[in-house]
Length: 106
Image (cartoon, rainbow, N blue to C red; front, side, top):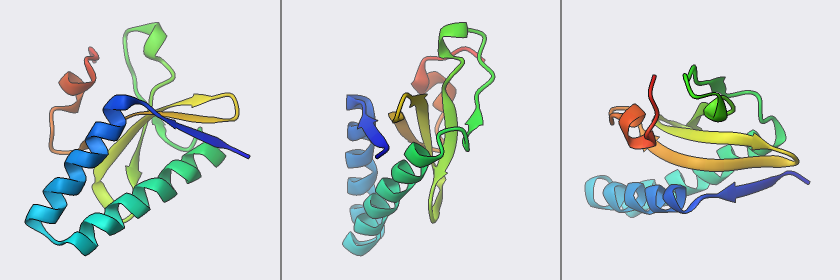
């Protein structure tokens, strides 16, 4: 079975997005977002190379990939493939300055 590890920053991101969606859309939309994020994480764990690799200068970060949350295309999942699954690094809105939020140099 494929495993999904969520880093602390990714868990905080999910909470922030949930609260934002409750306040600006509805509880139903926020609940659907969390369900779709979990589905997406499972898909990534089963097929960890389906996300686009980020072209980063730092070789230690070469394994970070980007994918979108199913049905929430403006929410991006940044993850690293791991033996037997994935590690979810962050879940960020596409309109954010995600390069800076990730602390990466392009």
